[in-house]
Image 1 (cartoon, rainbow, N blue to C red):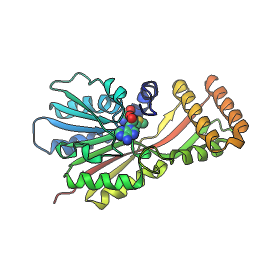
Image 2: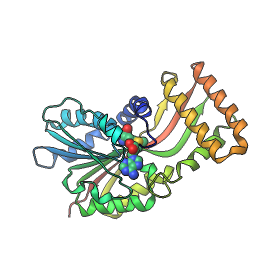
Image 3: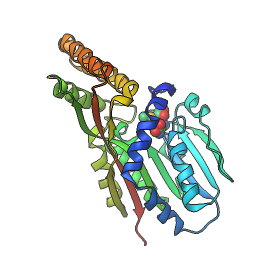
Image 4: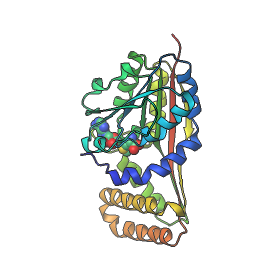
Length: 275
Ligand SMILES: C[S@@+](CC[C@H](N)C(=O)[O-])C[C@H]1O[C@@H](n2cnc3c(N)ncnc32)[C@H](O)[C@@H]1O
């Protein structure tokens, strides 16, 4: 079991989809993969969870390329993998591989892939792991990497509450705790990922994929407030009462249909330069 529940991953899927559509890297992925030959498109999704990335990307690749797809979902959480279902698409094949990527990156089938992808993974990993991963992709001559929804540290709310900045800073600090890969990159991840891939011979394109949540996203906003409350109180127990008051005010604004919240993310496309 990981810290990520099926409920949480389902709750975020609609916001993820809107953010990725706005980031608009799908066309470039399709163009890059379209230039390569081969019949079946082989995609490896790291930290795939219950397959949100698969359900987002596979239909778009199908519309853009019209080729059969073979996906391998890699994750350490067998229960999440067991819940993954592929969208209907001609020639779609789905395999899962349970593996701890922190302990054994070499188990990931990088060399067989036309596209390596991940979503909401890189803020959890360490700088050293990111560098090893980019080097492994280069050594395996992976042609294309698409890494979506990496947290970049922007957290804004409307209406504002006095403790917003304090809670945001505590949450971002908490994000850099060890998630099994060593000290996590948290909001430093987009830059570290870009630097790591550029250093090993990839062209990198970065796009804004922030969640821009409004009153229609009340359930997701409520879940986020509870996550921020828990993280902030863990790091600053002496401020527990003020953080509770902050959370109650935020929940009140959500309940009143007034709350908007931005969570900054980046999508990154890495394309291997010709030798
Ligand atoms: C934020 S979730 C994202 C899941 C999925 N990519 C999505 O967008 O819905 C992070 C995922 O990374 C997986 N994960 C965390 N540590 C891992 C590890 N050491 N090895 C493999 N997967 C891991 C978790 O189980 C979880 O499914």
